[in-house]
Image (spheres, rainbow, N blue to C red):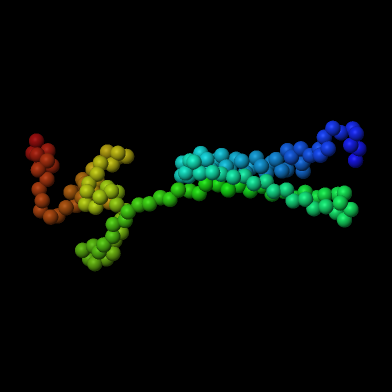
Length: 147
């Protein structure tokens, strides 16, 4: 090697090594990192990491060196999602399980998605009342029918 014609003693541009293959790997991993940062299911302040490993293997004369590269990313894990399940036996003795939607057992809630009042597991109150054979009288319904 002629050192006089070259001001830079080690002339290796990482983005041009292996015909740009290493840079291509870095770009792919960086894309994964930025997608992970913008994923609302991850913790926003978690650290992400991109690791570039260059492994140099010289020949017997120490003149020809093979560089093997790997690029890896460590992403933020997805955040945990929890819910509450109500379970018990129905009137026939069979086990049932449903997700608690109202946040409190036995409490009704207003579903903003469809504008209906629902029981604690998401069944519309109208549906419950129309299937109710308990002998209870819906006075509002009766008033509408008589009007």
